[in-house]
Amino acid sequence: MILIAGLGRCGSSLTCQMLAAGGLKVAGAHPDYEPTLLWHQSTEAQRCAILQQHQAAKWIDPHRFPLRATQAGSIVLWLDRDEVQQARSQIKFGGGLVVRENVRQMVKILRRDRRKAMRAVSREGLLDKPLFSSFEAIIRNPDGFARVLGRICEVALPGVPFDPAAASAVVLPRGIECQPDVSIETLLLAQKGLAQ
Image 1: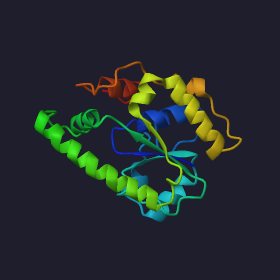
Image 2: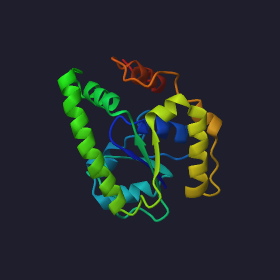
Image 3: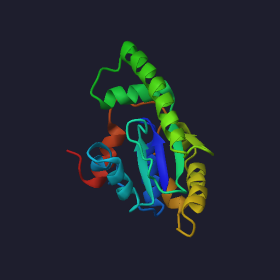
């Protein structure tokens, strides 16, 4: 099992899209791979049972959604993002005003929650050998990040094929800054046939 962990708007959806394009069975549906039932309306035992049916899944806000019963051998890939850009993205997605004071407050929340989340993941014994990457690394070098995902798959899922070229092909060219609109997200939903 590969768990893509972090705080919201860290690149976890993009990483799950890459894993799915590379051939893995990822919990949830394209484009966000957020199995709402999995995290928000289930017990820890139910979450773990659902995870066992997949090869990879998002684990956003680990301090809020423990997974103590996760099978041995799981690998956690923790994704970070520039905290100001992550704060701007979270505010935008929550429908708030992306203004200096709101960004400053959100950065404080992200710093606090990151510490809590990292402690929660460490408590689960899943960060003995932590794997870290970032949204910026994915955007700047999708081919390199896809190769890293391939190596993670080799360790976590021996014998399961993974196609790094197909994985990197899903990364749309863009900058690392939070966009003022939801154009990237709208494009992804249009590809799924959900955009209005």
